[in-house]
Length: 187
Length: 187
Length: 187
Image (cartoon, rainbow over the protein chains, first blue to last red):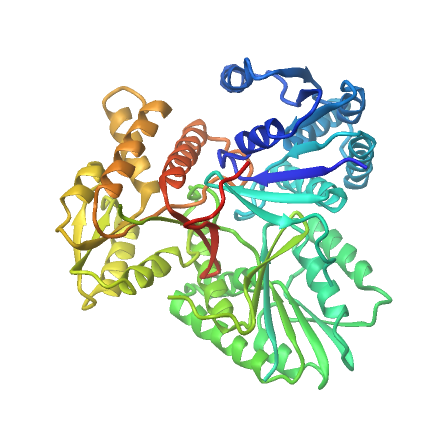
């Protein structure tokens, strides 16, 4: 069974760079980077380009999967390490899509989709690394949609962390192990 | 002397579920859940109901104590493990009450009330578990009341953590020990 | 070479008190406190005064350096332990200065200034302790300037953490080691 590693942290904590260096330290037939970020504005476009340049020339294949994340993971070439960056934008895209359709993204439905993603990750022969964000360590947002979003992200993170073999929190570029392989279960 | 355990984490970090599983792993004559959440709107009512259902049938007695928290802890049945969820709403309620009365909640007064709560916890024969939130890992809120609130919560958390035997940070459902029983003191 | 120690944490996490107790536990010819906080309003003035009172009578020399931080560190008396509190306000001041001049604070320029600060710290014979904030563990701020600011702070923290011998995260007044002297390098 493959190793599933969830890497979390705040904005600009160094979590993506850490995830990439981790993926590049693994011997594999190749590396697939699954980007969940839709290009919405100039600020995002610049950030995406900077990240793409960072990976340039280091042997990464990049696919875009703003919504069909489980499929993108399952379809990556055999033998590839897969890095998904990041789950928070995926949740954002799912919520936006649901609301554009006049509906809403139910938390249990999100948990089901997160479970599908976990299954796709565990079905691979090589490690899968998922990057997410800590978004809930502030006062409650005044905006109801922002509250909804952070609830959904929190639930998503819990589902994937429960399925993961390892969970790492990155702060100031420093990794901190939250869950380790072969660790004893919690009470 | 009883064991006082403070559990902190972001919104939807899994801290409440962790606190409950911890309480349920302790052999005791019974379990009292002290809820600090006042029912203010539909969003909160639904969340409270969901949590109540989660505890249903697992032997929990529930009391509501939005303000008189030290008394609720002291008055819990002898031999019960007590779980308080959460301190952040308690601080919110105290601040709201003070402002409704035309006054303010002084930080030193809050520290005194937090000290009373710590004393009530330590006066019990069985473990007391307190749940709180990390609310300060964001940029400074524009709203002055929000800044005041997060200062008060931070002070409250420090007072209870200093009194606690154990402090645990939960992120993505994973517990991380910040302060352990029998640990060496800091410099 | 001196010991460089970065201490991070949320607002009111107890990081400043921890940094001060750490500095006071070090035998040295004296202690210099470098304050980056400009006095902008009454709320800040009160907070500064409270912190100054906290240090009063414990042998601290205080200098104000809202912008020229590397110089203030280099110019501290020989043999002094130096404590800088905090990097987040320094970044805020640099950004404000750039914008007042009709320009902007480029992230690479900030990284260069952070590198100068690291060099000044490492040029000293006694330990230097830097205090910063975790500002990115919330949902993305709606305000573009706030997003820019938290990106800059995140970059600054990463540069100083990479240069530091030790990095500590403080939550609820409890220190958690993120990077230790003599630790093995990350993958």
